[in-house]
Length: 379
Ligand code: F6P
Image (cartoon, rainbow, N blue to C red):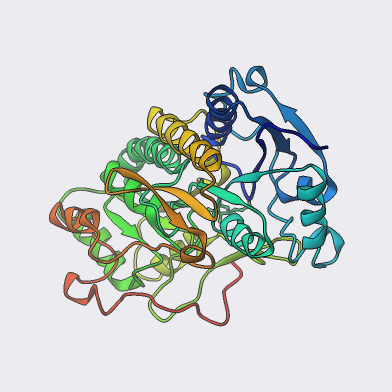
């Protein structure tokens, strides 16, 4: 299909999140309006590139999607072309190259998280010109301070914890709220501080059950007869293991975390007589309309990705660092996870207002978690 104008493929890989459609709209409108390009949208992430399921995307196709959650193209987290699970883990990257060449694409814009950026990096080595746009509620992509979807997830989690607060107060309970985020605690940290949570447990700081129980007891003694605990799904007790919801080869990431809130509740019951309840926020955090911040972030990152493609700068991911927009080479991102550093200003502010991170302040750096344990717990 030879063509004189720029032809750009776009896909949305990995799990969905609010703001993907806003990014897709920005990429498509900007390429069409400013760069006179043809845009082709692949369905269900890299699966669409492998199977060549693709639709032309015109300006009008992306009108009205700015505020919509999810992705109009569909997504898949089982479609890594180098480990293609629909075909038993085969390497089908040759099929990707065939699609890229047959459709006569000049470049590919991949809107995705860490898995998508790692795939994009490997495809770059094979000769595909790719620009990445970072999205994930987890905010765990290296090279960017913010990912599309994070702000909305924090907002949703904050609202949920606010609601838990009032019922905790009425019933004098310990309420444990579990957030997503995989191996990083960004959502729990931000939603926890935003909602004035009493205890925040992050994967980056291994907690002590006794310390959490002490916080609950101290609050009760001082007349505050309830405690709210925000726990990230990847949190674990000192020298303990991750809590795993599900394992399976059908996912690119074979471990699905989840269930720490119930495990923590049982641990606390050994120390407390107080009534304890748990809430798992789950996929609610991935749904809904994006916040104004996520819409503007997605629009800025999307239009910058389009501009980079048009000028021929590829092999990078657009990013935001210290409030300035930039781009980062994909090889600096691939295979890495951005966790919360112990010197994050929000941890310091949390400590200043009396929030516990599940360890004595003096033990904070000693409690830093560095490695993945070998045997995760099934709740
Ligand atoms: O990466 C985003 C995320 O929502 C994580 O926070 C969570 O652990 C995971 O995806 C859940 O994946 P799935 O959609 O496969 O349940």
